[in-house]
Length: 133
Image 1 (tube, rainbow, N blue to C red):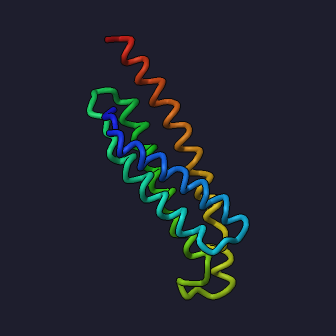
Image 2 (image 1 turned 90 degrees about the vertical axis):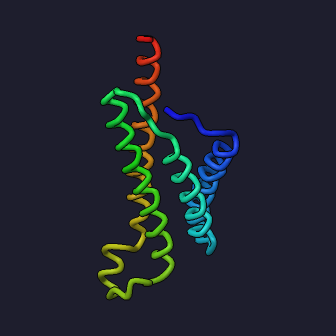
């Protein structure tokens, strides 16, 4: 895996912290929490997409695609958090409650599970690959 520079690593960590703060403060219904989460998600995802794997290991490539799917889910959760602030899509009240209202929590949970799985497995596979060399 391509390593991030020190500045990129700092942006990565700050983005992750902003995501945690934004998701946590949304429980308190703080008005700025969707914006904080969105900024953190954009920073986190952009830095994670900078890490590339150029090797021949098919398992790591597959896990990297899973990680990219979790990044998409993080960004979708940000959009749903922003949409949760009000009915911005112009949907009927029943449709809004069924499909948008607080659904960001489910998307965020799926993204977090995929991220944990892929991160753990990628590190395990990279260790196996390093032992072979």
